[in-house]
Length: 431
Ligand SMILES: *Cc1c(COP(=O)(O)O)cnc(C)c1O
Image 1 (cartoon, rainbow, N blue to C red):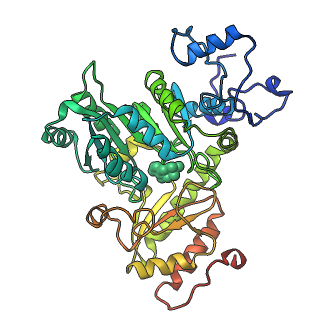
Image 2 (image 1 turned 90 degrees about the horizontal axis):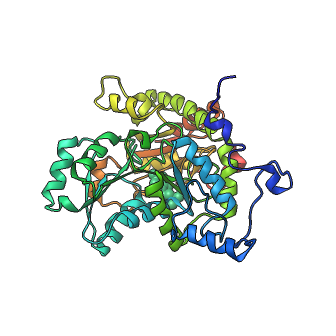
Image 3 (image 1 turned 120 degrees about the vertical axis):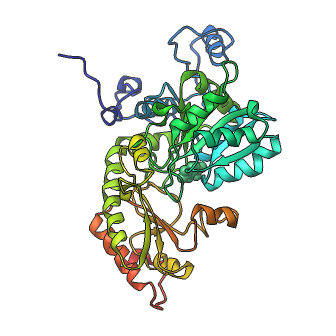
């Protein structure tokens, strides 16, 4: 027989765990323990030497178990499995997506450095960039989907601090507009300003498309970041984050995590291990449903414009980039309803199957109003520039039967423009 390489989805049930470690239990138990017993004092010494890099550990030597802030079987098995999807050398799982993002910023940036980031970014990321990084003396500048390599170079040069550029951060597709950023251009700009001694790191928030439909590490990113709260967790029942990259950079990220103490708990890791088993079928079903929903909305008389990558015309200037970077259009849809906040709210208040909630990527459909909810904190001028207007509604498509999803959207749109008082908080009973 020829050597066979399993697909990622086939490895999610077993990779990194042996039943004989746990009385034959087929599934990884929750290792609800803070510390691990050493066989001998000598072993304890050797493990600490490896963990703190005091002695160069032998090649391929897995760091042993010491203390659950440093490592834990649930954390390690989960990290091994996440590496498979992005074909990454190493992974670090965090207690939230924001925790993953802020740790990467803190590791890659120091006072006096310059950060170039894509706009718009997730609200929490935006807050950290504008309200925390300047406090530690980091200068920040942004770029958008319309900027090419020359523009990025000019933007950086104009600051007069080109030699202090330390990091390029991109979120693509952007939340909530689905605007896309070219990761290869970010890599080229980073290499243009980087030197052998001082490399410029490229980090990509891949929450919207990963890990199934886009692999930023293969396109030149040094780090890929997730809010694992979204598709990876996928059931609206946990908060977590993940960072992946090569061994060298991940070693730095993991050491900072050890000292910030912001790793995910064994229980959260265990839930994610369960989630990973169905990651592919969940995401594929969500995407198939989303394609149908986007097409349907696109024809609806009460809808002005739909923002969904699957609807991009092959002649659109972003189409080539979309095809290069993504293998599918994802399951996030935004649309402008005809009217403004009043009409958007009427639609949201009348949904029955969709839940009116922020977050995304879950098994159930979620709907929200970016201008007054997830992006309420973004300043009005930039909001306008990004297209986050009063009439914009964001949908995260779930795995429900698409007939039910379309029915729900239609009945809620039907009520838009009619002055019916919605009955709130008893959506469950109405379904
Ligand atoms: C939700 C989200 C985050 C933040 O993740 P948390 O798990 O909520 O901390 C970051 N980036 C994107 C794109 C997100 O959607």
